[in-house]
Image (cartoon, rainbow, N blue to C red; front, top):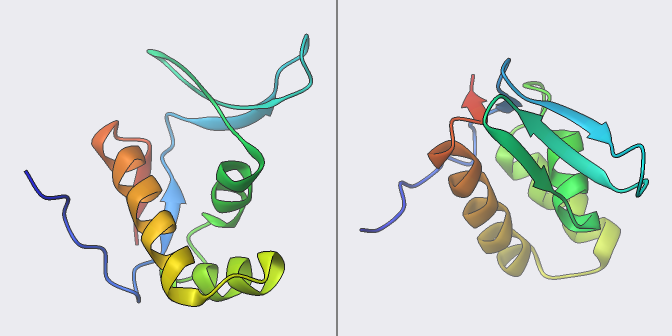
Length: 95
């Protein structure tokens, strides 16, 4: 099954049932939700931090491409895959 497409103009926001937090033991970022926790690598944390409902997917991609000096298309693919994973777990909404 192919993942749903995400419009570049969509504005992702972390779902109300989830929250970004730092693990008290390891000091690493985690996304907590009622059924569990998702450990985040630095890139995932950067994406999550930009999912405020204010920035579009396109602006998130541009921001991260500039930050990591990586081509927009490569970043776009990774951001879309990650957001689709979050959407599948109901951890992100689009406004």
